[in-house]
Length: 135
Image 1 (cartoon, rainbow, N blue to C red):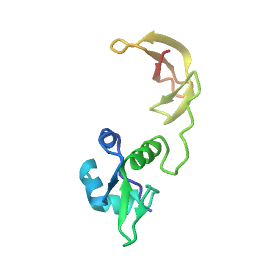
Image 2 (cartoon, helix red, strand yellow):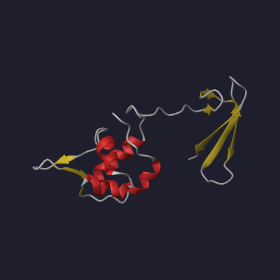
Image 3 (tube, helix red, strand yellow):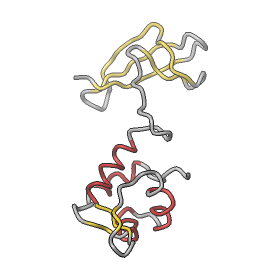
Image 4 (cartoon, rainbow, N blue to C red):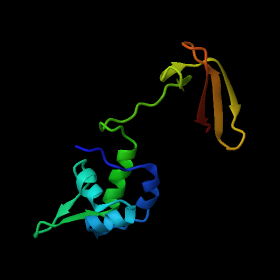
């Protein structure tokens, strides 16, 4: 089964969908994708569809938007992404999550309510950073 082509830029288009039934071609036009993407990617991946008496496919806009938001928060295999533990960051050299050595927290220079966790990787010694929302 092909993975749905649904990136974060399409998420803004989801807000425009109404609580009504769309033909797959109409939904594709609203999202800015081809109708083949709807038939070959979204529907086989589990997008909510309704078949009428004539066998035509209809998609409820609000249900599709909710399904798409849920899909964006999961991995390609349908499992939820585990949260990164506190005090850990992703090392670009090692390509994995590691514990930050000598961590330093400082406020982000341009964004409020965001702090930057900086330190070094215990494996390769490279600098690693992680941005965290502060409450």
